[in-house]
Amino acid sequence: MGILFQEIVLHKLKMRMLDSFSTSFGTMQDKEFFIVEAIDTLGNRGYGESVAFTVPWYTEETVKTNEHIMVDFLIPMLKQAEIEHPDEVFQLFSTIRGNNMAKAAIEGAVWDLYAKRNGISLAKALGGERSEIEVGISIGIQPSMEQLLEKIAGFLEQGYKRIKLKIKPGHDVEVLREVRRNFPAIPLMADANSAYTLDDIPLLQQLDELDLMMIEQPLQHNDFIDHAKLQAKLNTPICLDESITSLYDAQKAIELGGCKIINIKIGRVGGLSEAKRIHDYCQDMGVAVWCGGMLEAGVGRAHNIALSTLSNFTLPGDSAGSSRYWKKDIIKPEVTVENGIITVPTAPGIGYELDEAALAKFRVPVTTRNLSN
Ligand code: OSB
Ligand code: MG
Image 1: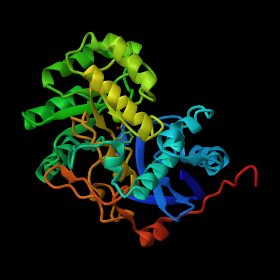
Image 2 (image 1 turned 90 degrees about the vertical axis):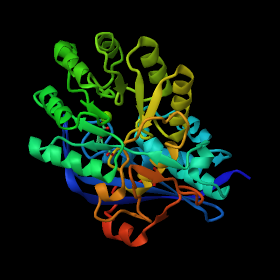
Image 3 (image 1 turned 135 degrees about the vertical axis):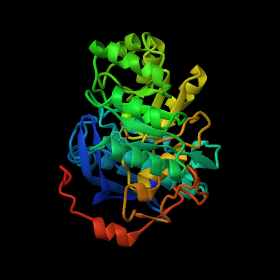
């Protein structure tokens, strides 16, 4: 028998991060998101997490558009479906354009449910091979150089495997130079979140002397062509984040020479099935991938960990331990990092339990009613 859905429940949560997080596009402190709970007719429960922010500055999606698209379109579609395998969800949702983060939140719950029904971990269901994954840390723009150096030293002490720094015009080459001077040998990279243009080629070329692992998304959020022009003039590998929203994008970006590395985020590409296809394609093309982060709570973090067990995730990801973001996470146990390594859980599904008390504590009302009700 395939999976028949009894109910799809949205839990809307609001959590305050321990530290604000600043990028070239803005500063975040409060995280609002949905935990999607998919319940099958046998009473099994799977969980997904939506990753859009309240403001559409990373992609066009927001918490409100996620709610609208899930409640009015995706949940009614799923409730009518019978699914043999979670790979079918992507196709089921293909008549709805875009809205990848809304789709991924629901598809993620179906993947967890599927793995639990089969008594296997999500990592195993995805075809993952690693029992441990390496993680780095993404550090937001800091108020001062002293604070940045202190933060870096602290995270290195905790064992994180690489340091990623956010940059923006006026806060780039000098900052990275100073960091490199203080830490001559650490694996270091920079993420611009689309803050530059081709006019900045001379500036970006100065990064070549700093031995960065890569520069992430220097140019426009939906571009591959200018990135290819830039890559031709840079030794530092370009990694694309925002620009890659599908397998098609990954194919075009790589064909054009727009990147040498891809940051895969489950939400940005519309779910785990598409993430896996991008992973497989990159592996065939000899392009390394790593798993990005969206300041997730525990459920989203668990999905990132499971995805990172696939064999071409050869570079450390951004999903750090729960305590880097939250005073209290929503899963038991919390995600812990030891010497830069997360041990992949082996229990069925995402491998972590929902902490019902935390869910109750952070819950806020869902406001959108299904249009057809
Ligand atoms: O570009 O990878 C990004 C956070 C918010 C929005 C975009 C990005 C990020 C991060 C942090 O770099 C990743 C994390 O720690 O979850
Ligand atoms: Mg990025």
